[in-house]
Image 1: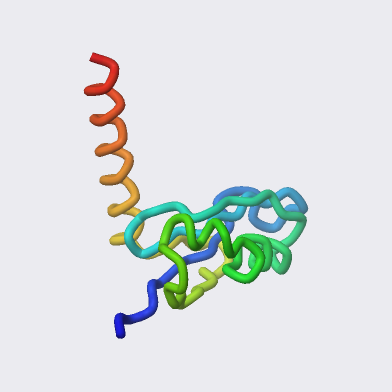
Image 2: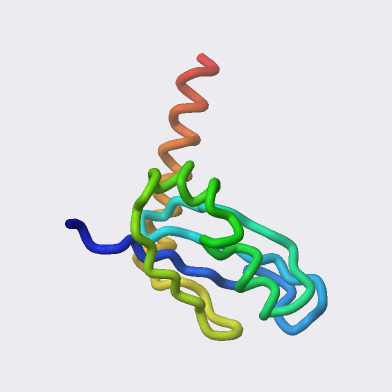
Length: 101
């Protein structure tokens, strides 16, 4: 059996306000879901695997075990996760450019 996929939940903007943008991102760099929430507690819930099960299955596959990690206030996921996300963005931009030509 494979190890659980680490998924990081964090407040992307609005930390400490009542309009917080929350994101769940897999260790592979794939964004699973986002949500605008009224507080940290709701943000953690709103992007969680129980609440957004279909989004998790769409990205990770059905039945994949998740290690749900909530990032500390004001922090972001580890550098390697953000770098993986950046690379995915570059690949998507290249594919879009190739499709347009």
